[in-house]
Amino acid sequence: MKILVTGGLGYIGSHTCVELLENGNDVVVLDNLSNSKIEVKDNIYAITGKMIQFYQGDMLDKDVIEDIFKQHKIDAVIHFAGLKAVGESVKEPLLYYRNNLDSTLNLLEVMRKYDCKNLVFSSSATVYGNQESPRYVETMERKTPSSPYGKTKAMIEDILEDIYASDPAWKIFILRYFNPIGAHEKGLIGEDPNGIPNNLMPYILKVASNELECLTIFGRDYDTPDGTCIRDYIHVVDLAKAHVKALEKSFAVSPNVYTYNLGSGKGVSVSEIVTTFERVNGVKLNYQYGPRRSGDLPKMFADATKAFAELNWKAEKTIEDMCRDAWNFKLGQK
Ligand code: NAD
Ligand code: UDP
Image (cartoon, rainbow, N blue to C red):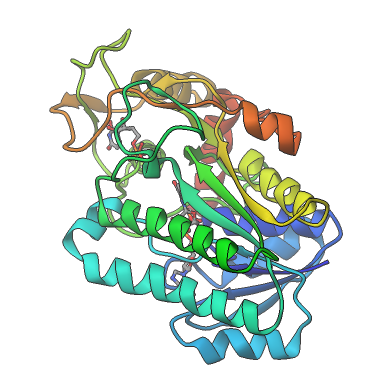
């Protein structure tokens, strides 16, 4: 199959390109490099021995997308491209609404024109908003996400539902990621944001490598066993494999909108991540406790049974693997 991967040089996209290539697909990538580096293309080749076809371009320009569909018979699209920094989205909502919504609308219009109606979309656990129970299930009614970023994901989910309702030829897979961390075991691709990271693992990596002085653990007075927040961390390679499963299923099932949580199903605290990172990597992390971060939920994790039942997918890798592989990638960057 020939698959268009938007945002394919980014963190999750690059790992998914590896899995797609290793499963015999042809991969075309469109990315504007706003949050990724061109070297990733060669690193994907170094891992797989196979080339992606890369187009540098912005999805806000519909012609850029259309040119790809003119040149290639695309069988399905995995749509990762988007801006994803929660805090930035609060400061720059228009940037987020424009980029994430328009890029998706352009893509959908071109897909419709070229009769390509198999789509896998990167959504997020953030679309659930604040639920009563910490175990998030696909059947829960969504509550309003706390950030403009999260709202773009919820809006796109609604758009996809409407498109299917208007034209039931679409096969749409909405994948709601929990907390992806880790890196490919070869250490050639991973997550390496510029500047001061917002997310836990990239911050830990910069503290471990002495680029930042000290990790602040946000809150130790939550109602959790060690007082720190609980999340569902998932190895990015497991996450990437789920995309291949979704894609394969999209060629086998009847048209519909299928929504899946992608998480391990287990909650892990911030303190557990810190101590596991120290233990498996033999590195001492400088950290302190600080106040709660505004907007953080105390505890959330996925009910991942639907993905197992319908995609035959479950997270295989451990927190130890995530911490080791993330650090291995970081060491290769230095
Ligand atoms: P990323 O920033 O590493 O990758 C996104 C890629 O999209 C980047 O390479 C960027 O250059 C590209 N891009 C952005 N806007 C574009 C545009 N207008 N045209 C072309 N390319 C564009 O992010 P990621 O962590 O790999 O996330 C991928 C997707 O998964 C995003 O949609 C994100 O919102 C979603 N997601 C990520 C997480 C997470 O924790 N990483 C969690 C839930 C959902
Ligand atoms: N966190 C932290 N210090 C940091 C960054 C994050 O204590 O510098 C905590 C945060 O409060 C949350 C968890 O780590 O409980 C995961 O945060 P992240 O931003 O990685 O993902 P989120 O769950 O917010 O999407």
